Length: 328
Image: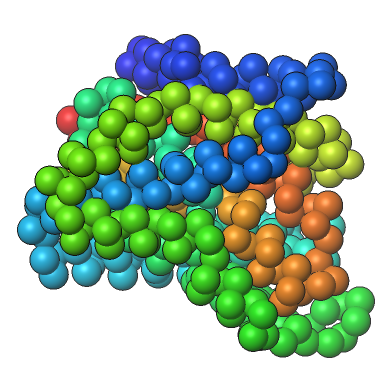
């Protein structure tokens, strides 16, 4: 327990997390502090490309080969199954309609790339290494959860009696060509193709400045999360409770899966973080197209206003500490 508290404390006093808390405080106090949308988008582009470059270069140096396939397949299966668990719990404990429960479930089976980036930086600060191909898992875990959510929504809706269409061209385009995923995978391929030598040529920008850019980005995320948390006041206590316990369930499944496929402690921690996170960028866009009757006032406040802050402030150090203890 002492180790868990020590790791959690070290996370809370890191510059990135303190920047997030500053943004959240400013948001709750209704300060006029804001990050212009264009700058916030630029920060996001930088982070996605930087993570991809570093992961690709590390994979090129590792020469992992086909040994990565079990981990990738396990990540896809995990992303597909988690929404079914989430859906069952939501229907059991809340009054969400079938469509709303399916929409929320899809978010919790998918991943939050910002939570992943924060977790990688947390592990790096503790000198904990992890497998480079985890970044490929991030990209692969977006789509299966959306498919599961749409399959769940096809069940008879008590209010309309209609079944939702499984796929639409616009939704497929949103899933396959999402900007964050393209940057992450594109950077990964560039990093893999150019190797560590190529990474060294851009290190002054994409490596040395990374922590500072992450601070600015999390400052903006704190502002956004505070706004969403204010709107989350309309959620029922059982829905808010779901936003807090579902990440823990996902983390247990992700950590166990990572251990089963032979990931290192760092890799298992990142897979636990991915399974614990909830998408608030790619999935909402796809769900709005595929399930127009789903209420965004439910799934966005839950994923961004409840689960995201929980994971960033409490979940990441908790998952890392528990998994490190199990591996020791």
